[in-house]
Image (cartoon, rainbow, N blue to C red; front, side, top):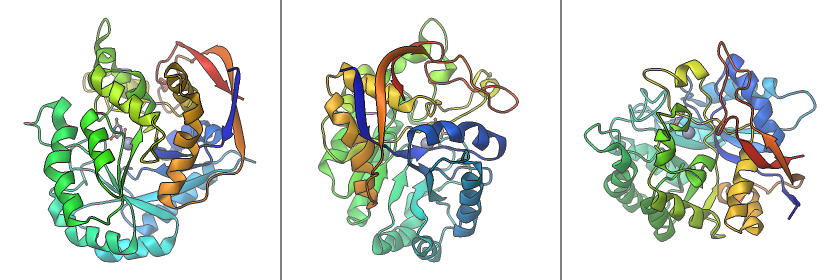
Length: 342
Ligand code: DOR
Ligand code: ZN
């Protein structure tokens, strides 16, 4: 196949940051996607409808002239979030979900939840008004092995949560393990997003010839058997699995550092990366539903009506794109891509 025309996709998990960083990265997402679920982990985080409205205005102001893009906002769950915040979020119409970060688990998660059970009154309200809960599905316990944190989260926290709130709609974000795939397949009212990096790479990529900070994200890349399980889920045609890039820009300086930040930048070439994954799995016919149908269906939003075209051509991913004080290194920088979006 030389050309692939599909319904314009959406990104169901995206970090846009703020200020100069927002202005630098937003055009990349707008080129590819019609909408995105925008993560709330700013400093300080987006905790209220008022915060979300102001952030949404800043995003809309940064959309390049003449382009269409709809930011779908989220609230950052804290120990102090109240059921009233949820009711206000639902009433706003532009807040589409609430994001759970375990305190200390990842970038800007200091305001996160210290004990998931403390949020039960909030989850009750979310279940009642049908507000989806988006999970950073890792335990933050430093005694749990880095590579087991998703699996332990599922067993210790997610399973009981689903038992307490069976009708709460949940997205297990950026899944990285076969355990997550199995759990999502078996449970009700739960879906999962899958990133390009977790479909393309296993944990060996972190250490190929030396330490490779641009492959470091959270949850961290896992073993090949887990990548295979994610790939099978993505190409399965099961509507529980859909696209979410988790594109998470950090400047080169903050990645190439003695304590480097977690996050892979894929907004520049997300659809090209996914197309390559699906093509190699001989499943290009499954890309459109994964990228453009199952996400809006889960969020109960209309599917997009425009189309995009990806063509078979070779091009080189830039080593760096302009960002803030220092540049931004895209995922797989300097390497060749075989698909290009028109
Ligand atoms: O790698 C990651 N980067 N994982 C996250 O959960 C947060 C994200 C970020 O905001 O940089
Ligand atoms: Zn994320």
